[in-house]
Image 1 (spheres, helix red, strand yellow):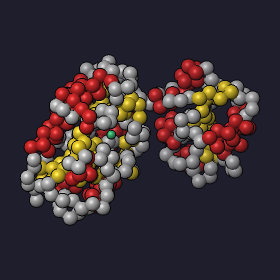
Image 2 (cartoon, helix red, strand yellow):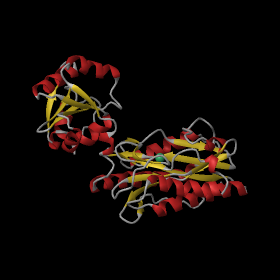
Image 3 (cartoon, protein in one colour):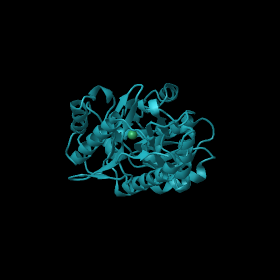
Image 4 (cartoon, helix red, strand yellow):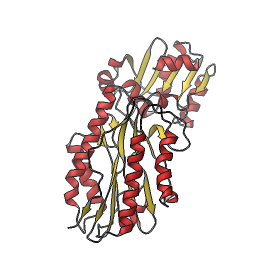
Length: 354
Ligand SMILES: [Mn+2]
């Protein structure tokens, strides 16, 4: 895959520095490393803390491990020069200006080619083993959610529920969480990204949970909104059902060959038709993989066409300030003629009364 990019971009080498690119292309799970891919050879640079780990994780993927002693760029520059690289691709989306300048100053003869999102785009279509890992990450999130539902009661905080979710996910094998867990109750549920706070759970309102497991380097991402209380209003029911219907309609349209903007439009048109178009202020979804938000982004502006093996989220929402909000999100694998929903947690409106 890296050779394909080298050829397409007509460059001699790629410097891989982004954490997620390193995980994807080299297998490295540590925090300090850099890779250099030239046509015939691949090198992975790291310091003594990670050498043993790199030998296990990275060597099998065809990289020669090079130990860095002082400044990483000195060693890397030496290899770039030895390989007689004239055009070097760099990950300009994530490399810091300071690091860029270091390389630029040491490699005056070299042309730097900005790779933009090329390496990210290369990750869009998942291999079967990647899909299996994502499935496991989804299963962990589903199971953890089932464990936490019985803990919902008046007086516990959003943070308490979030912590329990995270604890359950780790007990089920997650190495970490995909992103900061969102538990947003009552009026806070109207905040699309209301990270769990010290707010105590109170009756008569929505509680929105958005969370995921990070498992073997891959993420899951799910959102469920439940109602807590005895006296649910018609408006709560109305917006819940609109979001659910919009989500189901979009999922039904998932298949290879459809534009992601069309998918977004299906959900958005339905919500708009029901009068809440201006309360759905974000895109319909995004790709997931080694990163929580990756290509293909599913929104009205993208012209990416879905292909078999992509894994995306479908997550419409309605948010009404001062009242509350609903979002429902599943992870979906794109198949030739349908979308395979990975989440097993029910999407029927769940009302918890105790
Ligand atoms: Mn998401």
